[in-house]
Image (tube, rainbow, N blue to C red):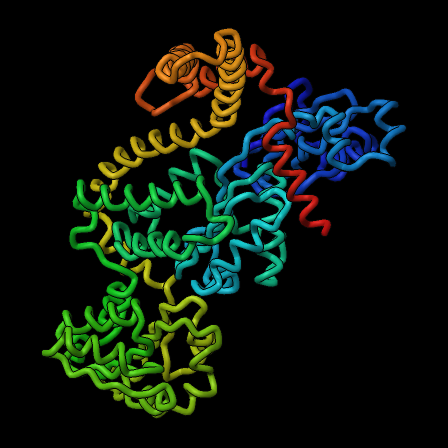
Amino acid sequence: MAVASGFATSLSVNNSYSEQKLKMEISKNTRSIQKFSYCYSSSQTRFFKTGNIRIREVIPEKRLFVLNPRCEVVSNPKIEAKRSSISALELLKTSAADRYTKETSSIVVVGLNFRTAPIEIREKLSIPEAQWHQAIGELCALNHIEEAAVLSTCNRMEIYVVALSQHRGVKEVTEWMSKISAVPISELCQHRFLLYNKDATHHLFEVSAGLDSLVLGEGQILAQVKQVVKTGQGVPGFDRKISGLFKHAITVGKRVRTETSISTGSVSVSSAAVELALMKLPESSHATARMLVVGAGKMGKLVIKHLAAKGCTKIVVVNRTEDRVSTIRKELEDVEIVYRPLSEMLACAAEADVVFTSTASETLLFSKEQVQALLPVSPQIGGRRLFIDISVPRNVGSCVSDVETACVYNVDDLKEVVEANKEDRLHKAMEAQAIIKEEVKQFEAWKDSLETVPTIKKLRAYAERIRSSEFDKCLSKMGNDITKNKKKAIYDLSIGIVNKLLHGPMQHLRCDGNDNRSLSEILENMNALNRIFSLDTEISVLEQKIRAKIEQNQK
């Protein structure tokens, strides 16, 4: 988490300077600082402002107090006199935080994955696909969130948003995540990661390409990214930037798999689960072990296919309905696939040596008491029944591992298998990174070009008003006897002149990633045109959005 721009270094504080003392110093100047927030960062240097002094703090620990510069208010007697009579937004406009209303919106990802958070935390935050549209609506109802998307899988829970303010947006999303999961904000902050703009784009492209997966190069994540787009179609809040980001991520995922061999021989979570089961079973029992799969969805279907590929000839499948099981049975004619309803799950588990669970159930399917009541397995199998739970939330209670006759493994335990399969694909990931870097540049160019769209529209409207006015004046001077052909010729002439005059300015406001113009140069051109033609006299687009958000939430 990087410190926002605007804090300069002027005084270094000794490492012995305690956090408590720093907080006391900060609280003395409440007019300069409205609030501070608590966060975690790998950086060891942070800047603070107290009164007219800017302080650089160097702390050897990771836990820091970071002031929110957007809330900084200049000590001004006139402002203080009006404080009680004007709105919070007007106060921001009349203060040094005026830059808040002039900043551009940002793409932000607030997430947790298998690297940053254990499954105990991830399962509490998991959002079923059927509720993604509702989550988007709730997120976009927050004051500083304009667009949103949810990517929730067994290995990650990531919220992608277009935030009107980075710091406020992160705060609101984190509070929302805490609210829906009952996980305290302080605990979320320990496990979450934050990425902004280009870094957020790069991260999603890596996710879609399978480079950020537990199983390097696995293909299931691309299907899950596609599902985000499919689910978001027509949902208010899944709009231009977020929709464009995810659609581009799908393109990247396909291109990486086409142009590199990273997915060749790769394993999925489902196949890793099968590999783990075979690693834990005695080798002599691989052909005779009794297999039970609970759930015939996408994950369960893959488990069944991988079991068949490993030589398993009989598999019992427990599912709510038989339709999916029948479809799988037709695809695997050489394997005996036996369907059992969910009501017979415990009876089937009592007859199985290995139980795979992969359902979307939000309640436990196997408790400690239920597993204790099951008949023990044969000593030839090892004397312990294996539960391989690849569901999030988990289907098998963690306390089941206390039962002497059972062993429980979840998705976090698959790393043992993954490490054995990863080495030969690491060099392929480097080829993929080159593709991702190129695609990030193209997307960022497209996204950055959107910042100039309001100026382009206003400049065209400004030119059109002048053209239309001068065209009408010309016609009035020429009288009523002018022919239609002449009138059309004059009209075409006026349109042609305007288009040729605007061609140069428009070219310098566009960026496709293939020219040498930097974003800063394009924004300088935009600001220059705004000043020259007085295009920025209206209230800023960002401020309009913030006003609308606040007014909507006050109703």
